Length: 320
Ligand SMILES: NC(=O)c1ccc[n+]([C@@H]2O[C@H](COP(=O)([O-])OP(=O)(O)OC[C@H]3O[C@@H](n4cnc5c(N)ncnc54)[C@H](O)[C@@H]3O)[C@@H](O)[C@H]2O)c1
Image (cartoon, rainbow, N blue to C red):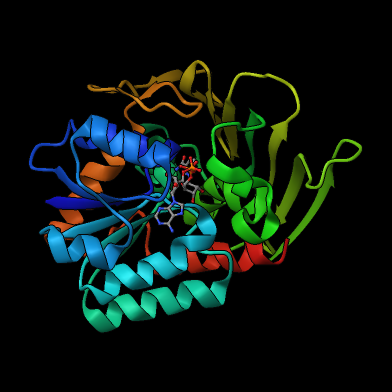
């Protein structure tokens, strides 16, 4: 698969590094705007263009991978689709449900696939959760908690992350990772309430706490934060079932059954890649991009990021 990489910042570099480990994947061209982008393309030996149309006119590409700031996703996806290319776009797909629907409709009309890179769906940790929920290994889920906490990110170019109209701030940018998992595992919640906080003079909320409620009696609490504190990246969750609990934290994924059996699930990665950003070495993006390229090769949607799930999540987040 010949890939056109759009955006060469934090995630563009992460995707580029991961493509180097995927057999048959080649970053054939890039689209970027800044000196920093041009410098990265030069180091990688990849031709760089100003627009998708220009890149497609000069380079033979099968798929466009969009790693540009969120507010540009819609426009760039539509440009890629207009060129008849399959598209991977970084999360969130867009900043409104209406935009996301328009993007899928355009892809469907052209007969190309649109994939949203909700990376957690491809991780071994979430794979274990999916198996445990679907197999009812510990019975029915009753309650869950998800946390995604980080020191305020500093790598983005041009300050777009802290402008609500450009990133959607914490709910769209960070919490969407967990909400996508929550919706994919437990369905669309019936209601959400939330609290938020910010230090004096901050133009955005630094921390949110969410409570998702289902009429069935199932509840999920979640927290997302860009703390003004240099904490290590912290992502963990636990799901309480009728006969046990599954915990994902710095010890990996551990199951505790009611009868005392402790199961340490295997989540070791065969290959890890230094992702840059604030994650360090990980196999997550390699799994994600390998899977999505396979789906694109077959011109099939991905079972891990189906359209309805992506739209349901956006509908919820839009209300926050
Ligand atoms: N999956 C994840 O874990 C994860 C992590 C971080 C960011 N993201 C997502 O990745 C996307 C990019 O975030 P980032 O942190 O890499 O941002 P960044 O600011 O580091 O990089 C953005 C890049 O896009 C380029 N760009 C800007 N305008 C452009 C245009 N019109 N055409 C082409 N390129 C353009 C910039 O020059 C830069 O190279 C965002 O949507 C963000 O939500 C995902």
